[in-house]
Length: 376
Image 1 (cartoon, rainbow, N blue to C red):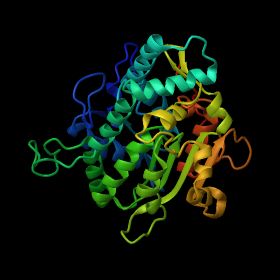
Image 2 (image 1 turned 45 degrees about the vertical axis):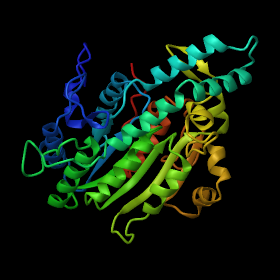
Image 3 (image 1 turned 60 degrees about the horizontal axis):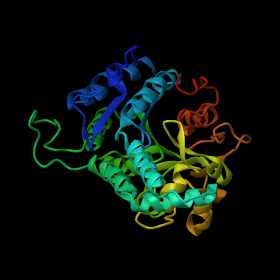
Image 4 (image 1 turned 90 degrees about the vertical axis):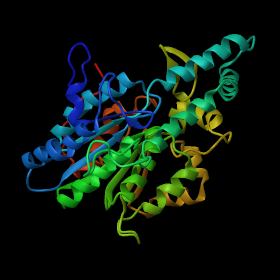
């Protein structure tokens, strides 16, 4: 869905591009309030009309927050046709840009200045964690999380462009999407089922989007799926867990929640790279866990050892509740919607076994179109 020179504007029926939490005008791909309106007033209704007989799965995707804008857009362009071929209408939030480059640059600069004389791999990783804590890594991660929070800001004033639902003054872009989604659902009851997929810090983004959606009157999401989620376990238990199970006291919730993540050994075998140069010999989640949150060694939902050490999550993901499931890679046996062969934090969203499991969960179908694989 791109031209040879990287024109991403053809993505507009499936794209919400945000910058600092606001709809992004200009740049590689612009998203205006009018373009969001057309998703719900033109593009989605047309797709529903082309797929009669049952509700259309409407899926909101949030990529990892350290992804550069061009990479996020390229992934969306690569994946959208596959979702459509499987009868799913995808909407991609592209919500932050270039923070991995900033983080990697700071870490590598600190390493060059302060590198121990003869670092072994494990000592080198500990040193990188120390550098990340003391060279601005925590501030970069905090900015990323603040960007997710800003995306659901309420408007400071009424819309300057319309009296009947235009975007308000300084309103968060995801808040506006949630408002238009709620309006669409009121006007088209039963037309769609709602699903959300968040990769890495996309789980943090979706924790805010979920709250905004329910505040705006969205009744329920059929499924939430997280890929190697970077959300704190504390925040997950506070913001997400109480919503699991449709029909709670507020009349909204999440029908089912699942996580696909690297198992313990694969997280240790992963690497963080910038410009094909390794600067950390484990998964990015290990770096976040040890160094980037305010609390050192902060437990994350995407790290198997953290989940298993938490009594509530250990019981919740232990199999007693069919609405909740954790799949730790490698998992190559069992139901087709519960498999993963992911080996990299950055690449779990392009790993075919994982993505086909995700699609089966969203569509409820075993027979799906094969995932196209990594970007060419």
